[in-house]
Length: 372
Ligand code: MG
Image (cartoon, rainbow, N blue to C red; front, side, top):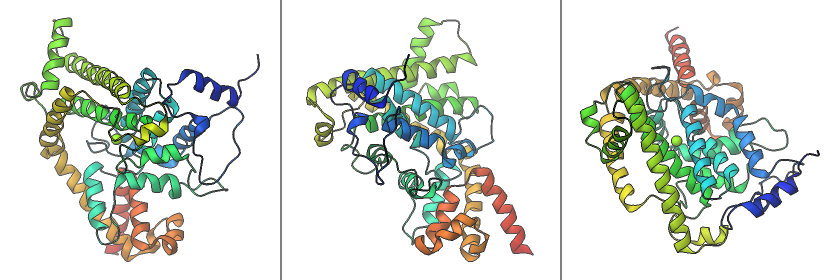
């Protein structure tokens, strides 16, 4: 048996994927031209480059919602990312879209997140308010375009146009591939479900509170009908599983209908279409708005979550200011970027790239240095 060539794989994609799926062989390419690979397609290469990136490995020690290290079962930004990739693949496969592309975007989507979750992002944005700001999606692009520096022939990872476009999700949100839209919605489905799960495990939500949310009530009823004997600690896991299933089924069905109604026949037609075609039904969309509001009120701004994150953020500010006043305490790679990027942007990139625990270590080191 001989191995399969890239050309054969690309021919498989043409045969198997839907006409509106983004084919690897039709990629707009990379900023720095590279020879094509013998047996790997373009989006496969992108996925591998992201997985092998330093910024990807650091996701393990970055806060998703609960401060990293708070509990061994709670999600980190890495496990969140892997769940997003898994759900992206499920939706992409069911709709005959390009799984490699959706997965690559999912794996890269949070590379630009600062330590300490959203509070960390807000603090870094505050520190940068007079120096161009900070936003995690833009930072994900800086990571893959500039900050990962391991390839001798080009800066960054030199990812394909379609993966980069998928990482830029706040811009032109509708004017992108269906695969990027899949990764975007899979991110939402993932955090809705796992933040509820973690909040129950972390005992900041009570069963009575959860009954306030329609999404929860519906899945609770479905689980109780099927497993009348189910009790905690298993019960909420079954409910969460059902919630994910309901959401994914809804997206697959609603998106298939939206694609048919729009009549799109190719990726360019998808880009020209006004609305996003990967979508929830109107009913679930409304239910999810309620769920999101509930999560903000009861989880993200819960004192047990927000207060520890705020303390950590104060340390972030201290470290930021310490580097600005003493740039020689930055790492070697960062110091080399000061001329090209400016001092504040360099400090911001450096801190955004840190894990929670490295920032805590740096805080201890820099404060000790100031005291001397
Ligand atoms: Mg995410």
